[in-house]
Image 1 (tube, rainbow, N blue to C red):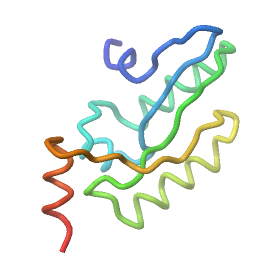
Image 2: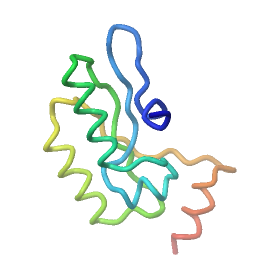
Image 3: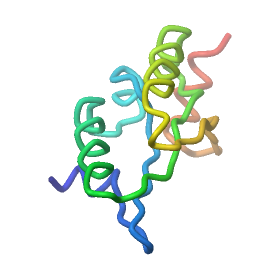
Image 4: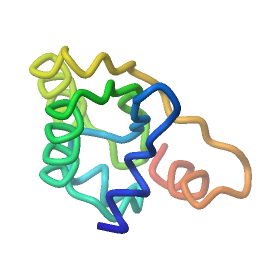
Length: 106
């Protein structure tokens, strides 16, 4: 349950903040240490007990492909009740993902 607390932070006014991706390949690449199934269960339970969910899906990881984008957008379209945003990853020099991203690009 400790992992769930990392990705589901309860905020004031009974809301929860979630930032992630809807594809296990990208979750692994981002070292999120959580699966899409775990995210689905946490969000379903959170929504069921009446806590509003805020957050978004992050796109642009070095491992991102058209397929992973399609998977995430399909998941996003199937869950409009979570009111999530779509965001691009922000990479800064020195971040682990910065080196991975640079190596994966021509």
